[in-house]
Length: 150
Image (cartoon, rainbow, N blue to C red; front, side, top):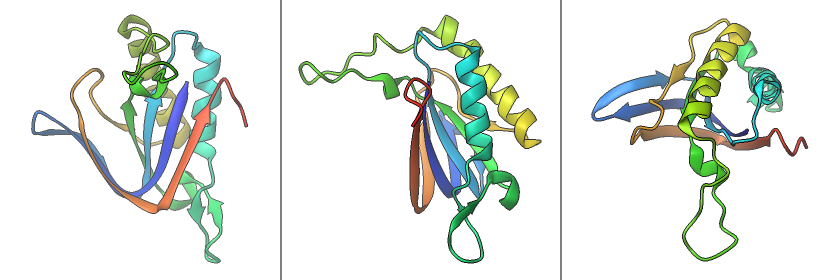
């Protein structure tokens, strides 16, 4: 799994003119699921997302977590995070999980993050043409890959 985590002051997802999810202060998380992903990947990544300390404290240092600021999460499925670009100019997506595998993991991530944060996770619509609006704070953008735990 790969997650692009963006610290935001606001973010929303719109599908066909309807808002499917919106948050104020918190995290916009773009989640890519690959065919090799398992529940262990999901559990590890959910813990990281819920606990990551990228919000500023009173000294301007990134010491606060989502819980510390009473923040929210907007979770968006993003298969293009597994784009293969080595050959040619057209990306390939063969490593991205097929919907029959990815949807249950995406839904499980929503449940897990809700349990860890004690808040309803806002969301996009899996497989839809989504329009994402955000105001990145900082900007702070973090990439986490469960197969490359740095």
